[in-house]
Image (cartoon, rainbow, N blue to C red; front, side, top):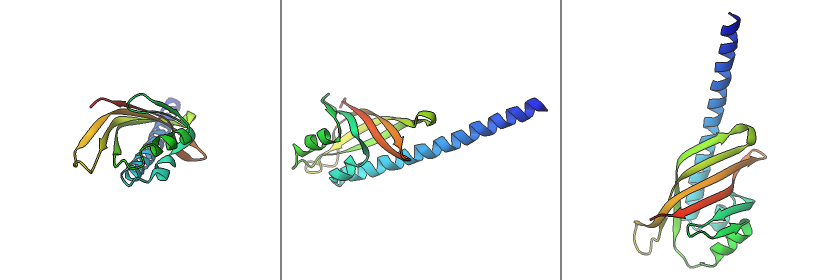
Length: 146
């Protein structure tokens, strides 16, 4: 009976952690959807709001940008561009003790001025961090494959 109670407590703990982690995955998925919408709406400040100040971004062509201001400047170099990007996660994992999450998937770039089909794409990964209860992207890597 003693072992049964210990096993039951362990199962309940694992179940509780799994439910909590699933909620965190849902939160990150919703943030990704909001980020995609901000990209499609060309709302650059909203896009940047999903990132930490010291975010590291590697563009699809391999350019490394260090910090939110560097990314803001990079975006500003093409003010008339009508390109937008959509990231589609295939996997999100949560590391609850470290307040980190891993997201990976595919991305596609669209230029509505030339049609509705993607004109470029590839794979991406993002490291999320939760500080003060809010998930933000700390690092993101894009690789152009299409």
